[in-house]
Amino acid sequence: MLRLLCFFLLATTSLAAQSDALFPRGEKAPNVHHTGDVWLYHPSDADDHFDYNLAVATFAPGAKLDWHLHPKGQQLIITGGVGYYQERDQPVRVVRKGETIKCTPGVEHWHAATPDHGVTYLAITGDAPTEWKEPVTEEDYLAVGANAQSATEAELLQLSRDKWQWMAVKDADRLAELFHEDAMFVHMGGSWGKEREVAIIRSGGIHYKQADVHEASVKVIDDTAILLNRITLLAVVGGNEVTNPFEVTEVYKKIAGEWKLAALSFTRLMSR
Image (cartoon, rainbow, N blue to C red; front, side, top):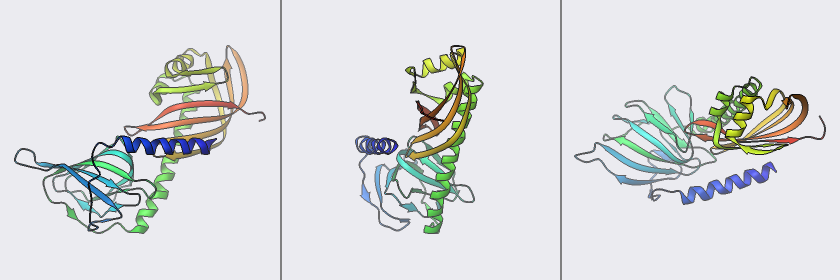
């Protein structure tokens, strides 16, 4: 079932990427200061009134720029895909659609697509020539992938653990902030949206008193993550304590740099 869900998400993400393109892909850039395939489109160049350039860059999976800096700075608005961004002597950031990167004037950095996903961004660059430095080695680039993926997975697993704790103490405000506005919650007794779930937790209609997590795993697909928990849940429902084993599916969506819980589904297991 998880494999089918992953396939569906990949397919819909691909179709959405095709239909949501705001600009033409442009011309393929010669491999002078980058590795891999990169296309550039220039909607607007600096002139007497505006001292910045606009460019749309589309990176194929595995494409990366050399180290460089912008004397007058640059901002990158990620419009699609998944990429990396790193400043000199700083950790690598994984960036996704909807995020903005501010490249401070004079600070050396590089950016790229990930090995498995392309990335597209709108670059707003001060009107001064880019200063290019040494290439990013393939060894360093490939090492980023494993470290970045494990860091993202660890972040999501910790967020899931925090969620169970917030449920246990009925912290409805923290949960309301975590839940996506269109989130859906599937229980043994029915399914409903965010507003009702938050109200039930706040009132104690369902008290997720203690969740013992036995196994947890996460799969990240672009800006979506599917997290599976095998838990034993002690809950108070209608004033009665009940204990049940569940397989819990959590779906998270990254929006403006933050993970939001978009779906939470409980499947009761036959044995503990």
